Image (cartoon, rainbow, N blue to C red; front, side, top):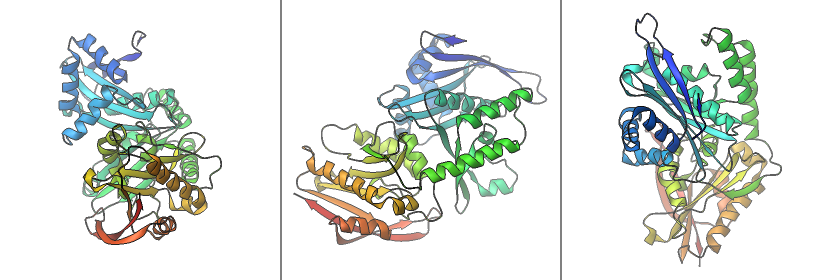
Length: 419
């Protein structure tokens, strides 16, 4: 049934694990944050505060108060450009929430959406509820205009060797294909992607198989996935025509997550030092906890980052420009990121993006005065660009470490002073 009063989709859930005598009976609610919380409250006779408390305590991975505040902000819709969709399953018997899923996209640039925070209560694992909420938020993201939906997942290698199923298997059933892979000392990280044709094809195959996903993808689905992966990789590497520059928005998490996690073999060693992002997966926390809060600060120039987008709004390059702490240093940190192949094909466009960010800082009435703009990096192509823009070495260096915790490189600091 569909609740037209508040646009929340409410579905009956009835599943049973193999060999079990009792069935799980419940409801799944899918919609925007405030509306989902309100609708669950009406259905379960709980107030909104109790619903949010249950989500935080039972269904979110414990990552600290700063991370919890980020999710609560999405439920409360505090960021205008962020379109958050949530799917929550209510257990009628236990009278509590049993599963959680979410998808985020930009209202202004919805071409990419990010699925995150898929979690099932331990007492209800093995029932397929994780697949159910992932299906729901993926479908909702496509309805809201996403051309692709992405997610990140990882596994401990020793658990895989012991026979544990890889986490990406849950998403592969829905059509998600591995777009990028990073192998660390004891962890394998994947960036996965799906588009509407692949998702719908997998849904039809599920229906043809009695509402159960086939154990392996069909040759047709695999061919479609291969084409999608090649098309997306090419999109972020080829010469750009008709790109445009605009500020990074409060809802651009999905666009940035896709770009920063493509991780080609010849990637830059340091991605975005101005945002504190060395490896791609760090982006989600850095952006949602620190960067987005800085963007929302209108009292001073705390964030001046710009994005280079294609005609559909996907971010192909980003120039991160953020005020360094403490603010009394009067320093803005700057860096850019795109795929190295994209930079090779579009050096003039990327240089113009960085120059536009510098101009944005220089012309701001609320920027620090005087103002130091600093770049810290090790990649020769990046260093050359900033040197050409008038940056000079300071003699300061900063150590970086690999994902395995081993020394990786020393980043050199360069600076430019604005009067």
